Amino acid sequence: MKITGVRCIPLSHAVPPEKRQRSDLGTRVKNDSTLIMVDTDDGLTGMGAALGNPEVVRAIVEFELAPALIGMDPMFSERIYEVMYNGSRAIPAIRQGWAQPEPTRRRGTVMEAISGIDLAVWDVKAQGMGVPIYKALGAVRDQVRSYASGGWAPGDEAEAEMAGYAAKGFTAVKMRVVGHDGFSFEKAVRRIAAARRGIGPDVELFIDAHGALDVSTSIRLAKLVEEYDISWFEEPISPDDHAGLRLVRQATSIPIATGEREFTRFDFADLLDHQALDIAQPDIGRAGGFTEIRRISALTSARQVRLAPHAWSNGVLFAASIHLACHCPNCRILEVSQAHMPMMYELFEEPFDIGADGEVRPPEKPGLGFTLREDALERFKYIPGPSSVW
Image (tube, rainbow, N blue to C red; front, top):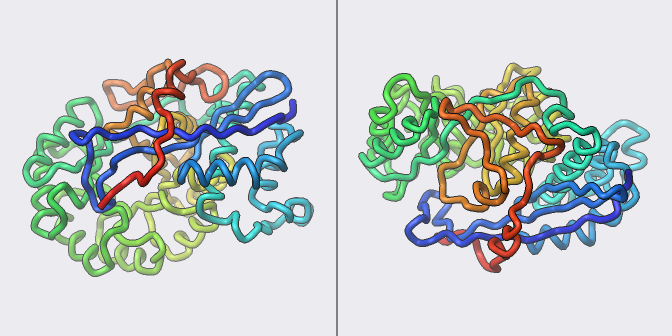
């Protein structure tokens, strides 16, 4: 089997004004994504997806990455990844056994494009093997516990919002530290207290700051909310400050989760060296796809750090995250977005299997296991412009 082409399809979905969520990241006005299709000479096509600006992703894939992949065998998924990551240095890197990445391929949108291609390669590979991706990777489970990811409501309204997620059967929920009403210590504590009232004592509660706070603010907030039995504090400070994250972790009994904005195993190795995290959250559309996150999983498990994949953006990336979670032995739980995201939940013919018990089950069809709806490309036609406004 040989790769004959790599195609990009930019997608968008505008968020209606009444469905927009305000947080420390601004107000989301549309969701963007890029489908990446890998075609082969035996008629199989693999489907992946990339984060990042779709126009930039398409240029990177079509002009930078795809030409080197034509004629390669998808069964050599590790080699394909190394070729994309190392670029012109791929042959000496593979021969000598150490990474020699081209400067522009280590981080950023190029790595997001590499991640998307890697997903499509694994889709083709698993189809060729006649098994779902999680079994091609090596399955450790056939279902995974999940948590409801939302929590934007202001003030005491957080009680009803989070209670609604628990009523769906989720045994864990996540809320944003910054809600529609902005941030102050008083507002944050009030919202977190309301959330705990809403879900009761037996449902886990996670909080997420999206890296918007500084070290001293994060430590003060953590100490104020420890009494509400928080199971993790996600991205309290900038992901660029691993040393600062260690200070936050040392100052609180709340476990620290981070990683959705990190790239490759090398970023996670640095987090581990700084003793900066308890829960690793690689995003399969950013950190290097299945190939690299398998390495991240092994690396973190050697330090007794658990995995909780960040899962957002669109249906392809969520589907891939389900397969990943069923493969990684140290996976603790999987994120399930509660935002208005038709491009996640209405992209495929088949629904996701999210049980009333909060357990998510992967499909058993070969490959990714999902089929694009006939009207998907027209319905989610790309819309130029910024995704968020402040």
